[in-house]
Length: 79
Image 1 (cartoon, rainbow, N blue to C red):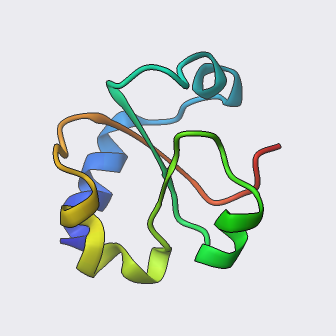
Image 2 (tube, rainbow, N blue to C red):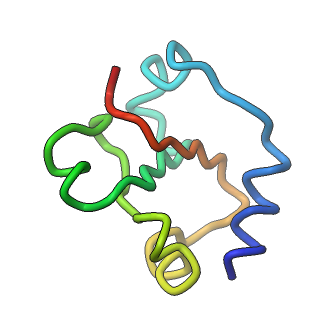
């Protein structure tokens, strides 16, 4: 499963901070935060899904229903 998620992400390239902010209400974009739960609780992009990197392999399929959607992955605070 980890490989499947990596492949999905790899096909998309990059997305700018500005584009993510402009698309916060866009249901076609999944914003995936891979920081630890404690960090996510303190600061995250509104509407993002928390999936700590250590849980990607076991939890990705449960949290992301459609791997064909655009998925923006980030691992820094909401700066």
